[in-house]
Length: 113
Length: 114
Image (cartoon, rainbow over all chains, first blue to last red):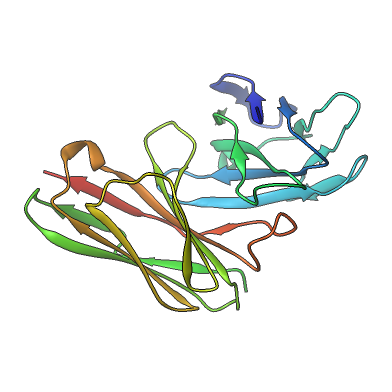
């Protein structure tokens, strides 16, 4: 069935370090892919998205590329800040069926000064 | 503007109380959703309203009763809840109920059942 696999956290980094959070998916059809971020005590915010193969989503210095051949959508940022500390959820919506997103487990990121 | 608002932000209720959660969006979205989120877990879908009609109920207990009075407003009525219902309740909306449109989430209501 449809599923998202995210790397287990927490991911702990120092400020200005490079960030990668891995995400792979199993989906029918050609899904749209998303990263959501949840800051402590808040709801989910859409961070970026990609709707077709080789698309690159980007926002606030974060990037992710839709890799159909490896069914992956890894999140990257070149230089993290303390304010990036949050939980990051990878998700997709399948193209041919339900319009309800399938979420990964979430990866907690902790950035130290 | 991609804002979904939710009230109240926090709610504490006893097991015999009746309370309601409110969600509002003014983006012209025609699909609205209720999710439940436990700590350190992804959101779990509860209900979906599509063009103001209930289209999905994920086998949610009847002590949760959703209502969509109009295209901008979504309520979740709570009655006789259990302590295990304590969670963050998130509302979301999308332009249309199709796979082409992403969901936008509100800030959530933190519910504690005592």
